[in-house]
Length: 310
Image (cartoon, rainbow, N blue to C red; front, top):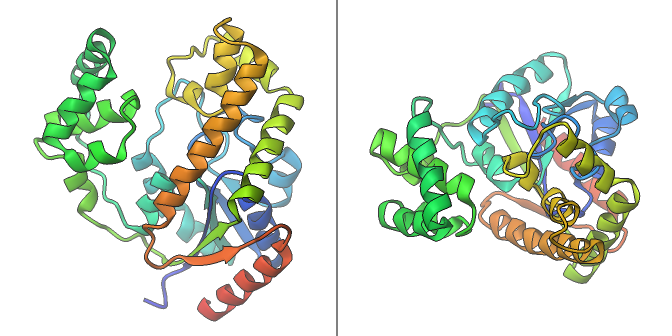
């Protein structure tokens, strides 16, 4: 077991400071960063995903950033397979792989060892499910999913059409619920050190509001307009990411810019609460409260943890 490379996982809610902490850890520990953000894989989506800058990527190698166009399919199964391939390569270079991100399904796929079956895909089945959602509404899919896979239905939002379609597709193609597939654990070729970053809610929410304002001031509206002009429509899963869907509604005249900003901040806070719920499921999580400005203390603690596990 000790011969397996160590994978340091840094997770936490949006705006807690994961990227900054991971970058400084990579500097001090000789690391390479693997993005655990489901939207940073997409090209042309920089501001709304808080993607690391070109300078940061030149200083520290970053993996799973800018690898897909916004209309290309990228799934949690693709992510898990990529991490299992990248970690040994990074370790072979004598570097520490650092997985940092807030897409908690992606993080759990690694930490819980989720196994994903490859044959459970059928384009015709998927098309019929999307058609049903269009004709009868997302609630019809959710009610169906509750009957055949109540565990998956309980963790999905009733309007999350894409994930409900995927869960039903797996069930219809394999005859086995997605939750059963996910329960078949398969550890990756690495040891894990999982660190959860947190801050008191009022501090985190202030940081979320400031982050939203920075993104808008940095040109998120123009970024979304450019994506639409490139032909990447609002129906794409990538364009449903936080910030993008609110800006699409504004650009399509369905809301005002002030209202789009309010919804962006509100929805991000709601997302942060869901991230905390996911994080509490991690049995071996090492929690670090960063408080108002205890980043240096947190970094020092993580460096010490890594030293004890190498």
